[in-house]
Amino acid sequence: MQKRTYTTRILLVEDDQGLADLLIRFLSDEYTIIHTLLPSEALEQIALDDVNIILLDLSLPQMDGLELCKKLKKISKAKIIISSARNLIKDKLTAFDYGAQDYLSKPYDPRELKARIELQLKKETNLTTITKTYIEQKSLKVFYKDMHVTLSTAEFEIFSQLFRHEGQILSREQLANATQAHDFDSSLDSISVLIGRIRKKLLPLYDNYNCIRTIRLAGYTYESI
Image (cartoon, rainbow, N blue to C red; front, side, top):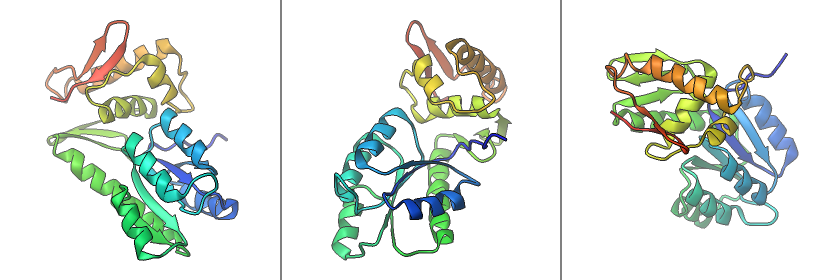
C-alpha cells in the first residue's frame, strides 16, 4: 500500500535521527514530512520544494541553526518553528529577530508541537481570508466569499502552487516537480490537462472569471479576482 501524501508539507531539519524518527511517526498521519540532517540539504530542499512549516533544530553540523533560520527566511515563506534544547533568552530573541514564528524548548511533548503547528497553519488561513480567496489544505477546498469547490489531490497541489506564488509565472516543469500525488502522471501534457480541470471547477466559483492565465511559451500565473 502506498503511503498517502498530504498537502501540508513540513521540512524537519534535525540531526538527531532518533528524535526525527519519533516526530515523523507522530506527525506523518496528518502531514507530509521531509527530513534533512544538514543545513546544506535544507537549503537545497527549500530551493526545490514549497513547504508550509519548517521545524528547525539549532545545534546542527555545518552551520548554526540561527544562521540557517536567517537564510531560510530569505528564500521561503514557510513558518519557522525552532525546536531546540538551547533555552537561553538571547537565542530565542535572535531566532525571532531572524524570522522564526515560534520557539519550542526540548524536551517537549509531541502533542504540544502538533498544537503549535496547527496554530501557525490557522494563522496562515486567516491571513489568506483577507484576499477573499483562501485554500484549506486538509479538505482540498478553495473558498471564495461564501462558496467553495473541492479539488482532487493533484489539482489542489497545482492550484496551491499558483495561489501561493500569485503574480509569478510558473512553468509546467515547476508545477510537475511540485506535484507528488501518487495517482497522477506528472508529465508536462498532464499539467495542461490538470490546469483545464481546475479552470472548469473554478469558473462557477468566480462567476466565469478565469483566474489562471496561460503565458505563451512560459507557463501559468494566478491572478486573484
